[in-house]
Image (cartoon, rainbow, N blue to C red):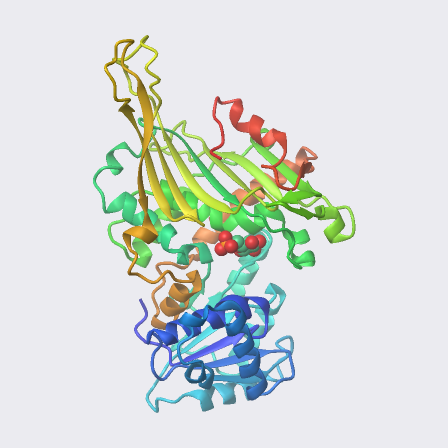
Length: 485
Ligand code: BG6
């Protein structure tokens, strides 16, 4: 943890979608709860030719649209923290004026610190860093936070990482994966390592397979150019899903500390076996109905045919002692029947059934961890059906269920970015992705893309509102496994 709290936050891409939907609302919500440093000034910058007052107006509209009224606190106080400097980050010229604005925004009079958040096209990362260096905005008391996409493969990601590393040491680089800001994702660590029950059985002796599903109902959402160059594998698997997998599969870290946690995650990511084309499925949605509403196909939304996958399912393997022979089935897609992110841990059958031959209906246990929209944990246990058992014992699966919102009803549910922005301001890297993790993630993704290319894999179509192409069902059924729905 670097030892200063930032007193200024500089937001690149301040008028963009992420800023309006997530960053400004998260900052305002933190402010309403008194969690921002009192002297924190927020400087927005982007290409738009607007002044401070217009930026505050834009921010007010964004807060009204994206933050519930009961979380806004005194908006006027929050808006007062904001100022704006127009900048074309592709040229060096405007950076001196930006540096001046940042210096003027310092309110404390003491030596403060600067946190910079880059939420712009990655093509601007290099020029932005060069501009910041030129203007003296990369000193010891400056942190750099990067929003995805960090490249499109290992080589381009390394280029970005090199450009940033030329100006900032790794201890001051904060790479966002917003899934790590989600409460239920962090709760995976508590579930695994704050309870004695699970760890002794968390291995191939007792676990048969793991499923990770990140299903979305949305389609392109106006992000046409970006998404068509990315696809589901790069947009969702490379980052969010591999982080979930790493948290499920990692060894216990020695402490809840940035180095210890990230050391263990990277070992898992490096142990991923390059997937074969036959262990992957890709799909692209066609017109259909999602949640009762007719929606167009991907090609119609895009306005041209495309080979980009909007769905992928992968049978992944973690090649180490703990996970030998345990498949991790991953699946993600747009325009699926419902929005759900969940992890299913399927345990093995008991080694010997005393109910054998009685038709009792014994089934193996499973643990379902709901990340969103439901935040709950359900352990399915076998229980005896009450009765006199004249025809033999009957068993039935019953859920032991914890709903996190009910268990912690008095606690505020927060936007993932609230936690991440606060950690950035304070300098805690535990929930940010280290360079070696990102690169191990890309290495695995590149191996899959190379397989797709070598085997001429193109996405199969699926009707919007269904669970992807039928090949995704076959992928698990071949192993006698059914996706959890
Ligand atoms: C983003 C992807 O990283 O995550 C989007 O670029 C996706 O395509 C989003 O919709 C999903 O995030 P969440 O928090 O809604 O699950």
